[in-house]
Length: 209
Image 1 (cartoon, rainbow, N blue to C red):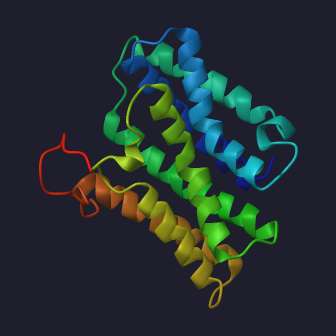
Image 2 (image 1 turned 180 degrees about the vertical axis):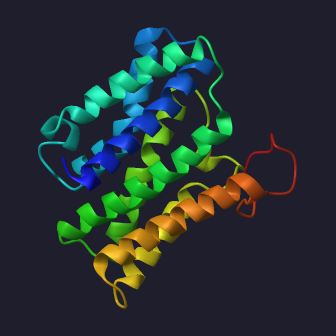
């Protein structure tokens, strides 16, 4: 097992934890927890592979991703019965997972021969789409659409930085710096509450055009 594969599985585990906790906050049963955890961990990569027409989808080609997701969901349930998971630590781990998955998705799109805009979209999709699916299944407005701390924007910025840096640096170093950019922006948003400007129309909320 290579080091990048180990990091990828760690990213799956981190996202599975966030999915399991989201399901727990909505009082889902055990099956619901497992489903939400797996969708959160594998959803972004699945959408990427479907859009890029990659077959088989990554978790079918390597079912280790599914086993890691299932095991992580069950361990999260067991742990949460006795101790409340540290929210800040989970957010930090999630930021690292976002960074890893975004650059991984970008590299997969690159290797498929796609140009810059598609690479950025696929990188962002890989990193953030699992959380969107999680929120939708939990009947919540997806986090990336809410007035909240920077998330998908960090992924976009990091993938763009990764592409630009390839013109000056080694490919591996550009990838590492792209990940650092994503993780740094996300962690900064967590610590200092960075948000994007909000678009708000004047007038009453119930007015219709």
